[in-house]
Length: 229
Image (cartoon, rainbow, N blue to C red):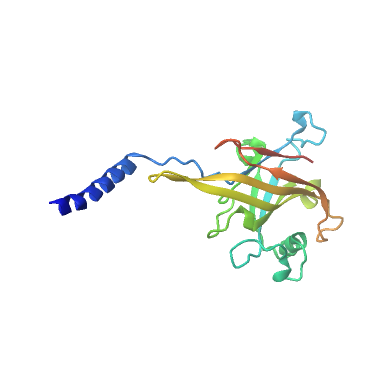
């Protein structure tokens, strides 16, 4: 009899835990825990370096460049292990020439103004606006943002360009036996405004580089990074 009780007791505990977990719905809301948010500063914001909403935010291109990884799946400190380039900016330029990057284009319609650019902000996440490739996360890529005007206007062939590099993500899993959620504890990167290209196809030169911190003070409390002209 005692042997039977010893056998039934663990089963009863497991049954109680299973019932508890079945009745609790995990609502982690951690899908955007690693996300970066960018906001275009406008002239209407009384900024001397703001964009004219009607004439300078017509088309925005988001480009993604896959970085070479080490055996542990982490970005190499320099691309020279897989190419003759000594820095990732030249490496990305070479991918530009070969059209080997991933591209998402936002075009704002003056009539409807319904897409992402109308909100004057951009979201960059592990799976947005680009499809996630395997287990690769944001920190395994270099990104460029190009702000262009419509066809035939000046910014089309010489866009304002920004580069996002050195992305660092730190996170942890936290929770109970029934529900475990991911929490980002730190996310930083370097945002650089690239100088205009004197001749299309020439190497990109860096302008102002700013280390940005996007760590959220609380879950679902985005920290927006400003993009100026």
